[in-house]
Image (cartoon, rainbow, N blue to C red; front, side, top):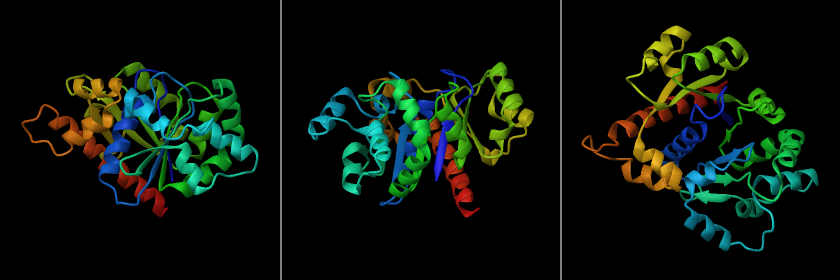
Length: 273
């Protein structure tokens, strides 16, 4: 099962932070042996790694395996090019594991530049995704909004596309007028959500005929934003997962959990088809 997180515009829909939040909360509520694999098809300063690992924890991860000159997505793609799929043990070494190995992150940062990574990913995507789907229960991909060939392939091949919407009329109109081919397998997620906006969830649902079972929100929350920038998303979500209604983070957690529940139902539905 492959789920692509994507937006029709860059830098406005919180794709990376939404994916970080959803994947962590989903794993916290999953079965012991469930594994979700996270990756990106692009390189960026703000990425899943910067959200999920503090600088200290990242250095500790790499110090534990200095004998790897190359790791992450570039290493996997190189092995696939050589028809030498990594063993389960090697795969564990080239990923960064979280939450008792319920989350496995395959970083796009590494020795290859962005152009080489894109070329190789476009060429080897089919083999790579088949391999990754065997390694985990679900593969979640932070998919670039830029018109990359690999983004087009990922969106076409994904079982489900989480379309990250912003509360901006022009951006909404652009998506719903130009991406009808994505809508058939879309789950909608509004990040940095402001319930006081003119374009609140119910209005978006009515205007674009979105069923309530296929749309969720990740509310605006300054503490979550700080956790994203400092690499402390996991501690933040762990600390607040069962917070009381008196907590300033209570509504954020409840709405994010509801989004996870709705998304999981859509994933289960796709698996049964």
